[in-house]
Image 1 (tube, one colour):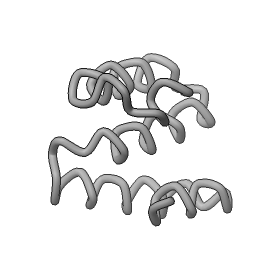
Image 2: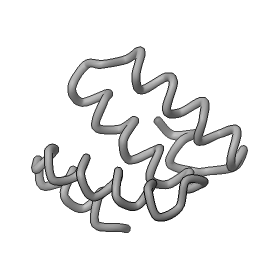
Image 3: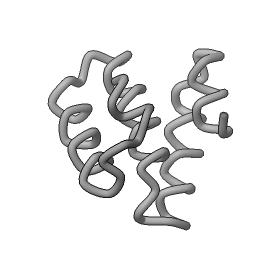
Length: 70
């Protein structure tokens, strides 16, 4: 588990988003970071954003477990 996912599990969504965005800035092809952001978007009921992020994650890594589960 990474920091963004851990913070999300603790309900610290703003920090989780910041951490996941930083991970994505460092690695623009991080399917994990995109999936983390999608998971938070789902929890915030922003399903359009979640769909966009998950599609991008699966384009990068078609077998990304977290993206497939979300």
